[in-house]
Length: 245
Image (tube, rainbow, N blue to C red; front, side):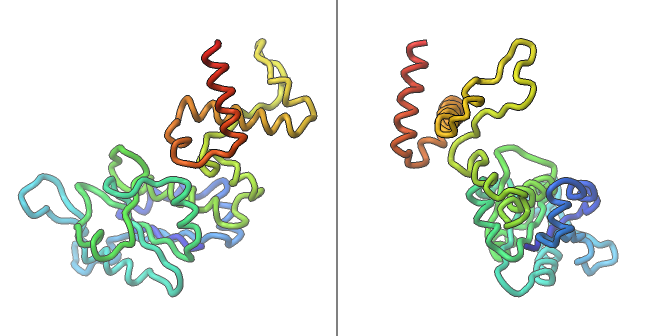
């Protein structure tokens, strides 16, 4: 899969993709990440990418011409999806990440300043994406988040593909607790069920703990999906135990 990021600060990406899973995936040619300086697509001697907004507001707005030119030159044949990173966009989540991983090329436009000329959103991109209800100084970190999350769904990027299926949000619930050595630390013990050798019992414990954590921290996730009979049973147990405690 190919990622193309359009930005006015390409140096911000120098270290973001130079380690870990993303670096290994790039070396194996599973993904390709290209960073494009928006100023390279200007035509004036000052390489101007922004201008004052019509209507008299403060700040600057990214101009449409270089962005249109960049996308049109970068776009490859095949299944391509172009996204603008913007606070006005659709909230990015695991479902959207998995959907985006099905494209051959993902073009990400990093917003800056007071925003981007609306004609980019209206006539050029396929959708706007926001990584959360807060404001960043630009879309570069958001683009890095999208690349990281989407790459995990590209076959071969994550060593054990099944681990992606057990990630939080992929299952529609938060993850279960994880433990490692030592078995006891400062008097805090690892739950004994994990040493039982009973894989069915361990799986049930993990599911119950995941549901409990989700119910407490993110109940909206449980409301947005159909629960299995086992999940319904476990949630009833959890609610009864919490009520009795």
